[in-house]
Length: 262
Image (cartoon, one colour):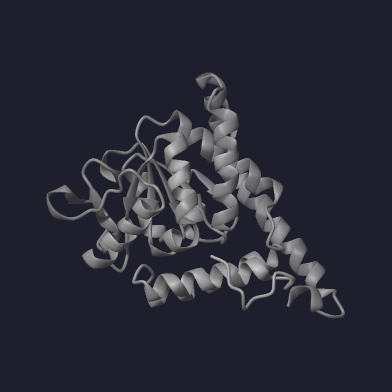
């Protein structure tokens, strides 16, 4: 979504565009007002890392992509913020990897869930599961509406991609024996720390990389894809990203002016 009132020459043009997407998602009933706070928190970290994808994030994206391609029942979990920010990319990644799309919300309402489903369908999704009616079941270990899942979706999945998430659900998914792939700008979060693979990157950049990697890797032998998955060390990758944040903070602290970061 572009906005003629924001000049493309602005040094943080895309960051401002993403803010507008979130606000528009709120106006359309896809995003809850709490989601604006969540977005601002992530944007602050993206600001620190320079609003670019770093090498550890690329490595994590490759491991996550290989995980989706080797999964028997992959599911991409979609909430309001992820749908508003990168709905088209989510639909594209699901089509390439054969993953099922399922709406999952902390602030649940059937009206919002179906609006998210319709938004994804408008963007080209063939099918989007909504945990409502007879399809609805609850995962063990979760008291919030995050535990509301689809019997033939997340409940049956062996691999789940989550983004802009709550740590308690990542823990519950792991406890249920599922492989969890996370897109999370905060490497200190429970989601980042508990997931099998965490991509510390902005969601649009992360998904774009996963789509590109899916096209590159989908013809690889399964043994090679499994090797990529097994060789990935999430704790080490997070440590590298934390080191990048530390170094970036040191760099910014040494600046005489902050014009480059406006």
